Image (cartoon, rainbow, N blue to C red; front, top):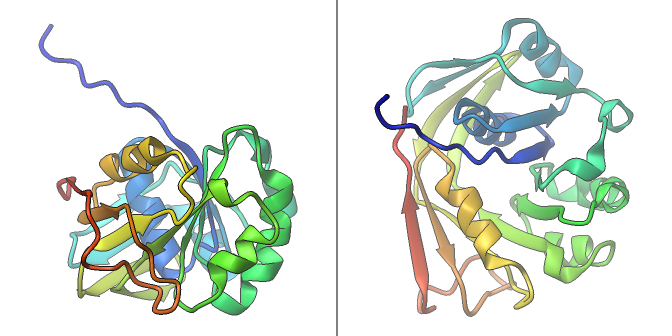
Length: 212
């Protein structure tokens, strides 16, 4: 019967599915995961009707199997999410954290894929520190209703969790299931001043998934 590929489906939501969030969520859905996009109606109403189109550096894709919500109250069974990937603007973090804090199920983890300083502290004020990871994202995306275009990628996406109690294996599993580019997981020292990982840290795990 040939080889069978086992896909361990991750159930997750992109909280703030704008430019970056749509790319991340779209490729995770393309890889076979259960993805909900939460974002603005002007973009996601088109995605609901026509699917999400991703173009640019990582190819031309149309992803249709996406759940869509344009308000938090439309999200169903929130406590079932294994991951909440936060992609809102920094000034929106506090409001998002209030919602997310009420969604946490027994195994829900949060990863902030945001620019700006202070996001980690804002999240940890409203949920346990050992549930929160951070990511540095420096690829560029342009957005139009229903579609996003990847225009530039300056460096790998880097993921990590400042709290030693964070389940590292869950972070590794998330990165291993992606098919955008290279995610680098760094454990050890974390600089909250610059928002970047210390390049001298030890125990780096580089995970590559092909673009398909």
